[in-house]
Structures are given as structure tokens and as C-alpha cells.
Image 1 (tube, rainbow, N blue to C red):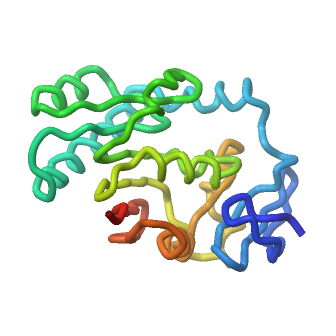
Image 2 (image 1 turned 180 degrees about the vertical axis):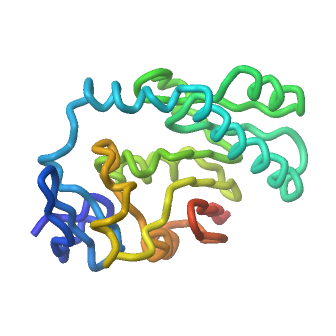
Length: 212
């Protein structure tokens, strides 16, 4: 069996095998993942991933980050330093954030690979439709854990997998750049095995806080 790319447990089983890929489920953390042999090469992944830069996707990203930032201000006073990880926010929205006295750095492995942004600590980190692209999610999880300050917030937008039996008909798996799929159980496992508290996990929003 395949080893889980998140918790490294070898107790996994095959959930689905179609014409293009095989998908496995980890019995420890609940991650469902595509077989590594079916991962797209970086050039093909960049081409598919780049489609998220269209105007409609930019609006969705903005509608995720801006209300979130407003909510965080109720819990943490003063200027906030945040990281938009894996996507690029439009300049208008960035200006709105800066006008409110906050700073949002951005990192995208394809379109904004500024590694200096990965050498700081942040009050909050946003990951909009990013987690499903992680081929080896333990690597990114360890990175995000290191980048977040104690008491900081991690906001994740990814459609939660709520029906393993219906996975074969779930359209979200059909995008070949989507290789990791998470259940609520997965984020509960991460919280229990790291310095995080799981505050909310439903539909396509997960909110976690790093404990001090």
C-alpha cells in the first residue's frame, strides 16, 4: 500500500481507480490522495494552475481574504502582518488591506516565488484553494506551522470530503492538479498532533489557531 503523504502512515487502502488515477485513503489521518505516479510535471501543473488568475477567481480570493481580515481584527488589535500563500491577490484588494493599516505578503510557487516571504513570522496565513494541490502536504504543513506566530490564525479554503462512498462522482477530483483531499478528521488529526487548535471546519472553510 501507499504511504500517506501527510502523516506517513502506511495503513492506507485504495478508494478508487479510474482511467487516469488511483486514489488512496489513510486510515490514520483520513487524507485521500492520488497516487504519486499520476502527478503532473511542474510545467503542466503551472499551465493548469494559472487559470486561477482570471478575474472571477480573483474576486473569489478577495471575498475570502477581506471578510476574514475584518473578523481577525475583533480578536487581535493593531496592525496585522499576513501571508497569502499559494495565490496572488489583485492590487485593488491589496490597497484596501494596506489602507486599513495591515500588510499582506504573497507567495506563489509559480507566479510569485519570493522566498524572502518564507523567512518571516505572520499573524495570519490564508490558503485559498491551495491545500488540494499539495503533492506532499506534510512539507507545506511543516512550513506553515513554522511561519505562523503563536496565537496566529491559519485560514484554509478547500472543499472538505464528506462522503467517501460518493467520491467516484465528486467532480472536484477530476482536476488533475487536485491530488490531496481532506476530511474534518484530517484537520482534527493535525490539530491533535501539533500546536494548533481546530476552531471550525465545515464545507470549504477551515480555521485553526496556533497555540502559544
